[in-house]
Amino acid sequence: MSTTTDNSVDLKSLAGNHFRSGYNCAEAVLRAFRDSMGLPLSDDALKIASGFGGGFGHAGCACGALSAAIMVLGLTHGRSDSSQDRVPVYAAAQEFHHQFEEKFGATCCRILNPHPFDTKEHLRNCLKITGATAEMLADFMEKKQNG
Image (tube, rainbow, N blue to C red; front, side, top):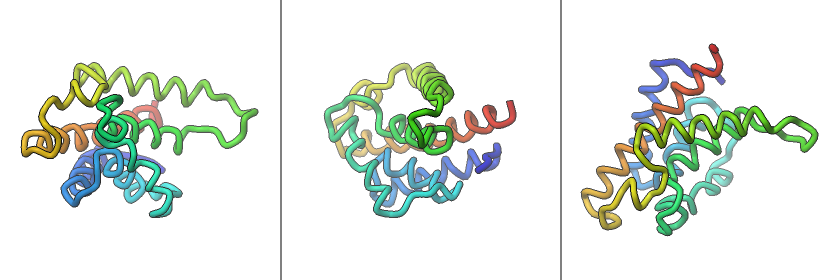
């Protein structure tokens, strides 16, 4: 499951295309990484991301694209047994969270996208955040793998 710089551009486009086809930001990011990296997620398992769009179902809390990125980190760096160390995945999640916040100025959906839901402005802004998050995550994972 490796990523490359070229792959980050592909993941940005793939996530954007999923978003344009009607998936929310979380679904789009998770699907893009599943499709690109062959993550072990069935179509049914991908449903887990559906409630994260709009910052937890329009609650405006944590960005769905960010939430999906943390899901991907869990899938690729997480633990499958409680005896395994959780520090590495916690550290990766925290570091990516900080990078996201630094890039966008916030992690809260209502702050990142203050436009009325489903308006042209809202969709355009969410598309931009969704694609950029996928690209950031691919770059982040590549640096972690090579680094």
